[in-house]
Image (tube, rainbow over all chains, first blue to last red; front, side):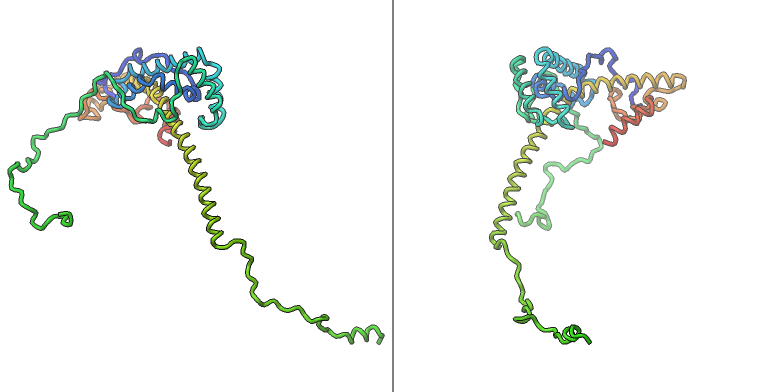
Length: 175
Length: 154
């Protein structure tokens, strides 16, 4: 394997947190409100992940994402369990890819319940596909320095003579 | 000879009274239901209605796709966070397994070929994702088979 003993890997305890133990239909059913509830945390994690391109650097951000998701589903379970299960079951059984368009009625009931109890509006259907700017407190990783080669070919000096092209320009019709 | 047979023999084959029907040799043009203008009008109308319905349906499908992508974008970081943790745990386990397996081999260093690293220009602490076969090298073949079916064929 390519992992040598000089590669730092986090220990098992550092990586063990309670995981989100729900099925796809539940994730899909709660996705929009969950995204709104955990928007900042998720954006922070994804920014970190894409900036560093290294799972080791974003362990804490990832834990925050999972914790936020667990927190959201616990809240939903406390206040809107019936409506949520109805909606998730509808998504699960109505189509093969758990499409949203088959379950608008149960979705409306669930949306109303979440709005009343948790105060989260369902965002617009394309809200999470839009690009937006995320403000982060984490310092950005340093940019790779430009390499300087000692034996690179030296360029012309600035005061070198630059006569007109001997046989005219390639773009003669523009000049 | 009997009289009946004599009468039959005498009967001649003659045209029916009033003569034969005339042979229709003139061209009979097919009945036309529409004029050319009407045909063009019908074509344009049908195409126009079809394009309108197509536009509405395509718009609806596009919206559904965007909605699905939106939901998946929310779920993705959750799954990625969980996957990262499990991935790092498994890398530790693999490294430990290799240490145990090769502890009696003299000069063996984990992740290298007797101390010769695979990537020489990379920094030492860089985490390089192993290929699938290396990642599953200490697992059973069934596990590797399932993972490769999922990952390499899809």
